[in-house]
Length: 325
Image (cartoon, rainbow, N blue to C red; front, side, top):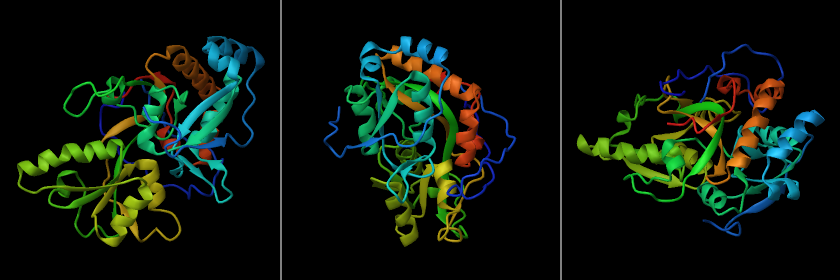
């Protein structure tokens, strides 16, 4: 379980230059908005691994009848988050999540169909059954499982998660880090940029109370995309952008950005797994997806996908339901 702070893994090769070179790392064990509001339907492009017929039939039998009969897994994602989920220059789906989704779909005997929509609309769309799943670097937290607001009251029905990747929050600052920003407390009295609806948004929101207690208010600038948040740092309007480590590392190593931005912290500010998001009452689909993910991991497809996108550091040993804290 992700209960302790993780050291930030060392930067690796450029994620836009995929490699299948094997790297040895220990695995981390893990335990209502309308689609019309910005949704864009996309097919799951590219060839998917072929599952063994027997195992595929067994898994298909576990699926809800409506999904099995439709033959398609409808997945929501906000495709602006390389190397996790994005569109390549040709407009094709790319990244960890689309490739892993295709592998899972293959083991279930389903094709996958992505809908591109704003991040903060994904969970409501799953709850409203407009999507079967959301898969967009969504961090599994107990608060999201319970549908709880920051003050503890029930805000929505909650969701379940099938956890598939271990990660945490990093801080991106201008190269040189002249303000010596390394912790959340070091942001007090300053302005931070975040993507709206993310765990980083929630984390910054909670930090405002700590900053107020010492008389140094924290200002939060919220944006629809991380690109906008990063531009806020580049302009000097914010001192830091809080983001998931894979994306933060990507943003500090890409051509034109290396030497412009850097990671400020050597440990995650907050740890938590990425989870495939499923409606709370759709336990049959949740459990079938978990079984399929386990087969993808055991069969070696999982490692190949993570290696391709240079994110092996977040590998897990098995699927876990609701492992977030």
